[in-house]
Image (cartoon, rainbow, N blue to C red; front, side, top):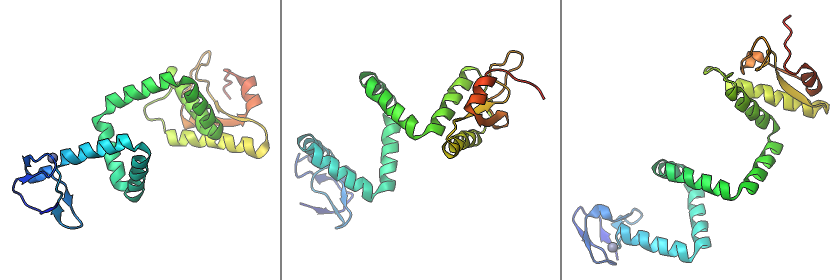
Amino acid sequence: MTQAITTENKICTKCAVSKSASDFYVDSRRGYLRGKCKDCLKQEDKAYRIANPEKKAEQVKKWRDANPDKAKIITKRHFEKNRDAMYQRTAKWREANREYCSQLTREWAKNNPSKASANASKRRAKLLNATPVWADFAAIQVEYDLADWCSKATGIKYHVDHIVPLQGKTICGLHVPNNLQVIPAKDNHVKHNKFTAI
Ligand SMILES: [Zn+2]
């Protein structure tokens, strides 16, 4: 049963409680307030979700595909509201599925070699405090993409080398584009942490 939009209280057809108009959803297509209150509809939806998890997931997916912008806002709002709980749940899940997670990471690294090696260098540079706040990560990523491209084009493995090593004996370099060069991996291994000023 529907009722014209009103600002007055309205009785829910399900729980029979008199509630304010804002406690009811608007059926915008027909310009009516829904008969059941928001709480009752939410409860029904939850019961349906539990009884028909696949159908509900399908419905949600359909709606999300049809309303990508709204879906993004809802996801963001939900994330912000439940940030800590979600981080904790994710951490717990990762812990319980450690093997699966590392497999996913390995697969991702295999499919995204230049991003993976850029990430590895970023971690290493962070440990060594070699990344200044002004480092241009997009420009850094270009060097790793280039190394990957060279490897694929030539069949020889290329690495991104720190011209001045991050952990040199007498001098420590920074993890910044100016200090990066793409060289064949074997040269990089020979060079290791040596730096010869020209
Ligand atoms: Zn109700």
